[in-house]
Length: 191
Image: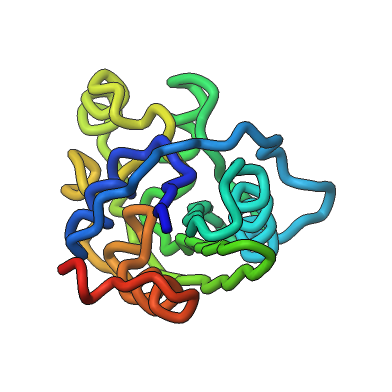
């Protein structure tokens, strides 16, 4: 049995390593991540996690793990910003407000798929022009839902969270360990 991580995210690989798990292969799927018309954040994240898991080519006994992290401001999905201007718009909209970070995890083995979703609430402080420009200049916003990663420089902008820190990072460790165990992957033998 091989464990395949269907993600190019170094954070997800690091979070698995925290459980003592090193993927046998890293095969990020190429799927359309555009939200459907009227799609709400939680169903969107759950759909993407499932579609990613189904898109990874594997043998029947392999275990595939995929996830999707979505930042939501009310019903609005804040995906990965296309450029620094969009990242600035996202960070400005999030400033001084609470928002949700939803990470859906899908684990597949053969025809069986198990899913779990982690929802956290995050408060970001209102950013000064200096903070915003410095963060944009760092490039850390690239490839991150909502334009920020809590584990980097943006951690200084987050005074309060309720939920899963690892879920906000991109892979809720408790939920992931439960899914892997349920699908027959020996998590605790590895640790």
